[in-house]
Length: 329
Image (cartoon, rainbow, N blue to C red; front, side, top):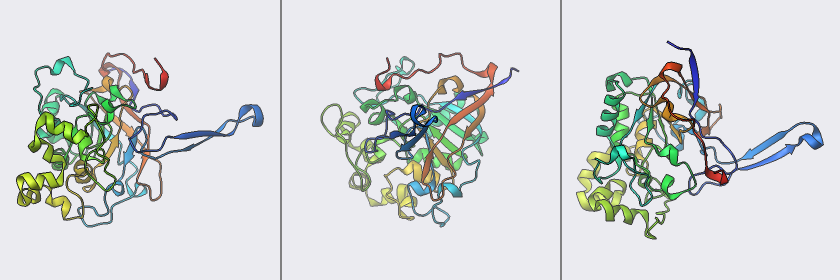
């Protein structure tokens, strides 16, 4: 065995960092400068869900499944986002016009791009871990999307993602935390980028049509219905909707609006979004995952630095991560 080393799993933060479609741009200013005051002191104004960050239950719900008021950041255990971990290689293509195709996945047909139990079980097999071993562990998901991190439709609109079935799988396997390398714990169409929530935007895709219409055109109405409460009820009926999403509706949650978030967080499984850095160096490996949000009283989440502690002999031999957004070529 070699010595233990740390691998950075966070995207670098700056005023130009890519951010979710309706988030404010970070403002970084100086309170003091070296030339005038002999010290450099900076201040930041931004949404706490910018870049690599943690979610607390209160971010997406009012009540958890056990009936308690959804917890804030300061109410989560100090080690809620830290522990023994594995990074799973999720082999599923993105779905949109600018989707980055992986040659390894050529054998995959164009099928609906929702990560579910089959993809998670397959990834566990290739990481040489029995899903039963995941109890109490942090599960990092490498979909390859972190390599596309940018202010782009590719990163935000057209990512693969999780949904209700993946959230239930995480709950059934009693994982501690899920860290995702894309824009959210849920598929883009399960978020307000699609047709969900009071803030829903139903953003225009590269074709000029809404991304909901693009998805229907590629995969059909039945596949799209998974992301839209009213389409699901129209196509499959109220009974079918209640059988699948009723557990969320019973605690006052809109079933197709970020269901993976709510299944996880409502059962005490916290999440990390926009995981990045040198994630490819620890893919299919086991390691110790470190992630600590600010001890923010009444916080709904927090930016965080994530890192893996791993034996240097186990680190995958891949190039160091470089970033090209913001004008760097």
